[in-house]
Each structure stands twice: as C-alpha cells, then as structure tokens.
Length: 210
Figure 1: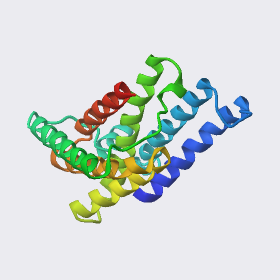
Figure 2: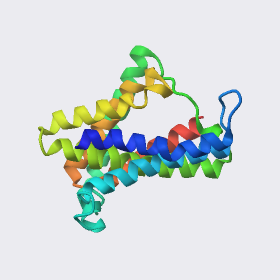
Figure 3: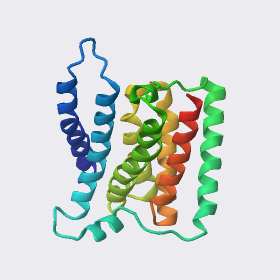
Figure 4: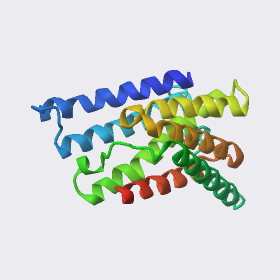
C-alpha cells in the first residue's frame, strides 16, 4: 500500500495540474510561470492528500491520528545530535561523490516559478514538507512495518531518487543517499519533522547556489 500510495500521489498531482497546462496552452512546450507554479503546487498537494488518505485508512481514523502515523509529531532535544550526524554523513558522501564523478548537475527549475518569494514557497517550504510526508512518512513508514530498517530505508530512498531522475541523472545517487539518511533519521527520532528541517536547509542551499 505504501508503494501504491506513492504512485497514486504522483497520479493525483498530475491530474490536479492538467487544468493549468490546458488553460496555459503552451505553444513551444514551455509553461508560463503561473502554470508552473500551479503544477508544482498540484504535485505537492498530491504528495500530501494521498498519504493523509492512506493514513486515515480512507476515512476510518481521525486526521490527528493520521498525522501521527505519518510521523508529524514533536521530537526530543537529542534529535539535534542525530540531525548533525545526518548532515555530516550527507556532506561526506556528497564530497566523495563529487571528487570521484564531478559535481552533480540538476536542472534549474527555480526561475520557471517567477519571483524569489514564490521560489522560496515552492522549493524551500512546499517541496520538503510534501516529500517528507510522502516518502518518509508514508513510504518508509509503510515499508518499515514489513521490512528491516536498512532495507526499508534503502528501498524508499531508491524510489525517492528515481523520481528525481528527470531533473538530472547525475544528481540521483546523492538524492538516494539523502533519502536513505532522512529515513534513518525518522527511525531514530520518531518524527519526520527533523527530516523536513534538513530537507528545507538542503533546498535553501541549492536555491542560493542557483
């Protein structure tokens, strides 16, 4: 159900974004900034609504119960140590990867969203929150009920990285490792909020670098 939920979330995001594409009617394949914003918001909405529906068991449980099942809960101060460890592990991997294969290249989508405040809203806030709910809260959380910790973390990370392949193949391995680390962080802290914060930090650095 967790893997199927990811596919359903993707499908929901696509369906929600179709009206914007139809109305925009791009001549040369490039959407307007407004249409790009709507499509990105539709994707984020799909990544939020489907996990919520799955976690409520399609309406049988309350929203509060669903949010807790998805890992949206508080965390203890010791989580800060695990967050620092996660940052260190990711930076080490990123450094080794760049040294061996060169800096990963990823498509710059920020400018397609128009103004900087809108870029921040979509890239720094909406994407980290929705992706952590979907890929760590629902996918990893669901896989973890059937698989050992490392296997569930790796499988969820592989799916997370693969779905970013269209923005740049060379960036997929670091993203897989990033997803793996965030899944283990969720396991250690019992909350996806630390992962959301690190995801926001990562996207902020990426946005500034663009």
